[in-house]
Length: 369
Image (cartoon, rainbow, N blue to C red; front, side, top):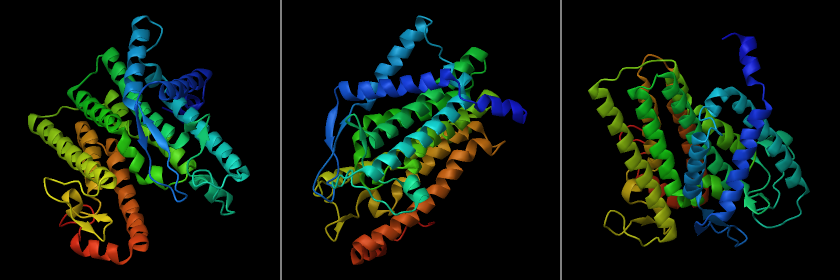
C-alpha cells in the first residue's frame, strides 16, 4: 500500500460520518429510554452525587438485534465497518478534536460552582484542552464521560464483529480468529454485565473530560484494541493444542484476577464490612482495603488487565510484533499509571499509605514487581 493510497483511505466520507452519527444517536436514545439499574456515583466534594443508568448491556443487545435484522433484509452490510476502517478512524479522531474544543469553550464560559461543572482553568490552553476543564459535562441530560466510555467499548466489539464478517465472507476464518473474537467478546460483554463498577473508577470519579479521555474512549480503545483482528485477516496462523490451552488459561486467569479485584474494591466502597473470600476484610486506617487480591498486590487489577491483553494477542502467534501492540502499550501505560496512583495515594493517605505499602510490598506482580 503506497502513501497516496493510504492517505486517500484516511479521508472521511459522508458514509463514515453517517455511520458515526447513527451510532451516537442510537446510544443517546437507548441510554435514555431503555430500563436499567440506576447507580449512584461517588460523593463529590460539594456533597452531590450523579446517578448513572446502567443499561449498556440491554442497549448493546438491542443494537446487535437491529443490525442482524437489517442485514437479513439487506438494509445493512455487516462489513460496512471493516470496509471503511481507516475512514472511520479519521472521522472519529476529527470528532474527538471538535467535541473537546466545544467542551473547552463551554467550560471556560461556565459559571457553575458545583463540583461536576465548576471550571478548572490553569491558563495553559493545551493543558486545559488535553485534560479537560469540567469533571462531568453533560449534553441534553446525558453524562458525556459515561457515554463516551460506553461508545468506545461497544465500538470495539462492532469493529471486531465486522472484521469477523469479512473473514467469513473471504473464506479465511481460522481458529486464531475465533479465539481472538471469543476472548474479546467475553471481555466486553462482561464489562457491560458489570457496568456499574465503572462508576467507582478513577476516570469517572476524578478525571476531567478533555481530549485525553475522549480520544482514549472513542479512538484508542476501539481502533487499537482491534489490531489483532485486522492482522489475522491477512495472516494465517496455525495453533497447536498446547498453544490453544495456554491461551485459554491466560485468559481465564486474567479474567479471574481482573474481575475479582475490581469487584472486591467496588463492594468494599459500598460496604466496608462485607467479607472477602469468606473472611472479615482487613482495612488499613479505616480506608484502605488490604484483603483478597488487594492483600497480594497494591494494583493487582492491573495484572489481570495485562494477562487479558496478552490473551487477545496470543492467537496471532509470535511471528510479528504488530498484534502485540496492545499488551505492550498497556504494560507501559499501567506502569506509568501505577506510579501516578502511588504518588497520589501517598499524598492523600500519608502514613496510612505507608503502612499499606509495608503490609503489601508488591505493586503489580508478587515477587517480581
